[in-house]
Amino acid sequence: MKGLGRDLALAILFGVILAVLPVALRQFFGRSSVSYLSLATNALVLATLALSWDMLARTGQLSLAHAAFTGAGAYTVAILFKLVNAPLWVGIPLAGLVAAVLALGLGSVTLRLYGIYFAIATLAFTEVLKAAVQQLPTAVAGGAAGINVPTLFRPTFVPGAMERWELAFLRNQSYFWVYAGLLLLAVIVSVILQRSRLRSAFTAIRTNEQVAGVMGVNAVSVKLLAFVLSSFIAGSLGAIEAHRLGSVSPDGAFSVHTTVLALVTPIFGGLYTTLGPILGATVLAGLEETLKRTFSEGYLIGYGIVLVASILFMPRGLVGLISRLLRRPRKVVPAEPEEARP
Image 1 (tube, rainbow, N blue to C red):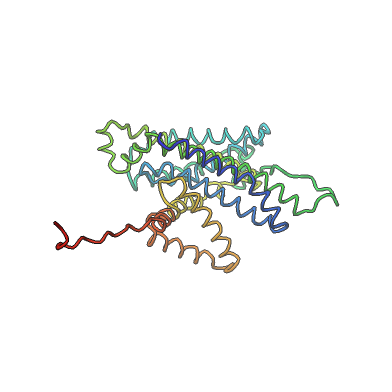
Image 2: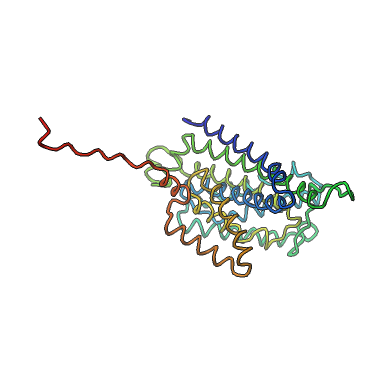
């Protein structure tokens, strides 16, 4: 647990920065702060998704089921709201719990698989869950059309009292802080995993699971723990997204695009670290927005080129690149001439 206190202090400092960021944006950018705040919110969503995926990746498992857990969270909170009018603060943890239970069941069966076999099993699970939701009664899950979920945090417009951009900013600010709280929780969990004995277990399993077993590591239990934690955070994220977007449908909730983003972002930022997914999400969210404004029709081409180039030339992601740039060059000591030796 060496260094845990320092890392948790940095995590709390990170939370304080997130807490004051909307206020600073409004102060400095005025009307433009609405778009900047939306961009920052998208970065938070992507960072939370990527960090939760990275927690399982540290055990060497390539999961393609993240869309299943975010979708399960989104549908849980939507159905709860529709049937019993459950508030956000009740729906979010319950959505995370449902996703964690699903991960527990899926992991108990599939975590003995390796490599591509585990990846295919998790991808198939996403499709099975999507089909299962589509088969639910329309009165419960809305069928193929999905369910409308009331958006929260809607300040009342009073003519003359407040401009519309200010009302939009207040709504976005409330969601920003909810996302920031979830990301802070993910960061704290990640830091604890990194600073505990579980880090050694993760590394041993990722390097050679058979050797890890000989060393006394229960690989299945450790991977199951990482899977459940990862899925709880993903399910909670899906629940907040359902409220923010105002609707949830099978195609949108269980989209492969979500899984691809969860996988690509930590690779771009730096795998098996807490900072990497956050850094990768911040850069990719800004890059996507810039490319959209510059090349509205073909921005995905530029986005893809950047990702491919980063994988080719930055094998350890942005974190590895920054570490290499900051590494101090070793001081070369000139060899002593032989004639000067005694």
